[in-house]
Image (cartoon, rainbow, N blue to C red; front, side, top):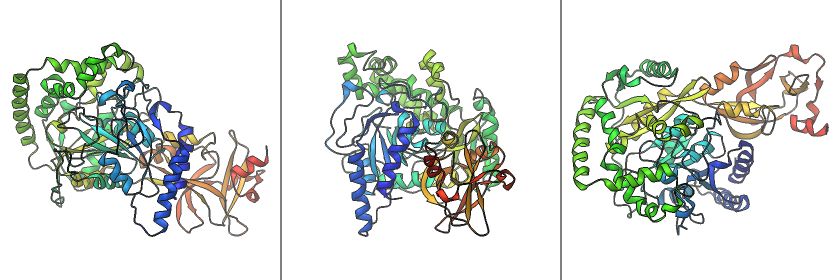
Length: 556
């Protein structure tokens, strides 16, 4: 798909998804199309742009030239003069920015509801939270509007939303990606993160963004970890640390552990209590003063806006850090060092710690009833990573009760590539599916593909070996049948589904529909909707229209 075609598909998809709260600023389509046309011109001229044909969303605490940076507060907004290096490097690789996404204000929260721009609803179930703070970025990625999105992560904001929306969340080693042009939450441990539906694309983006920029004093040069051993060791928590998870999640986690073990990984159980104690220091100790240093002066100077432009829960957290004393910080620093020494010592010999990414997926109402308590449950396994200089990667690992379940691999600094290698053993590859009727974009059953985590790939035509029939069903749908002769090309779309979503989608297909192998005009093959011939008796042959949409248009 060309860059211009991908941009057109992005705006069409955005109009379909009904998540206006996911965006704070969306660029005019004409402006983005013009930028995409220039990308296509450069590619045609022979320039290598590895991200050409992709679109990007950016969390609105990261600078994009030409768009205000609000950090989730209209009163805080400023006009950046340049892209943040993370954005600039991805743009240089050929992606185009669609707009800026909503977030928990000042990146303070893991729920996605703490924003005057509105609570961001989950991608799979709009009654549930999206997770935060990188809420909008995760949702527009999961729903197929964009291919890539940038978030940030201090306590889990680049991992929790990935898990709750069934996508990949890459949290690099602290300092690998410069945070220049990022509104700080806790400056010393903030990370720029990446969301994508595919691990390979997310990792590619992370690699493209990495490297010092000469401005961020905390930026670091990569020191890649050694490759995996023939039989690597992965730690998992002892059972008591899995208590209180959402219904079915412990069993789902055990299933992931089993798959990893079957792939040739040795599993060891570890009591991770010191790591979880260290995690509690992020909000329960003097470290919260770093949030006060970042935006406390702004909130203090605008107290009259608390409850309107400034979220009350965020204000309470940020201003509370003003009470911390220097002595408190150094005591907590020593406690963190000792807990880290003990906790990481228990992981000695393991290349990674495997955990659920988060503990539950609450509804919007549940978070509204207990905003602080509900949020605190989200970060059990994520809060310690940046405090203790860990790399981490969140990946989808199935569906439980109709909602995504995700796991996380946490490793040593600079073990980012190692974690990606392990993650490939956890998540099965996605499946491409041809649809030709009621599941096309804009048609009445398209929502089923979206609910299964699907994303639009391309408009295509089949090989000239098929005939299309109008079936007597409700809602109306066609039946695609391969024939030995007398066939014709049929227009359709290819959608990409995560393996778990594909399995759930196929299991729910009613007769006479089934999934088989379909051949496309370019000679490639994908899974596709095919119809049992028994259902064709009395069905009208509509092959001559060339596709379902043309047939429907003829009946108007």
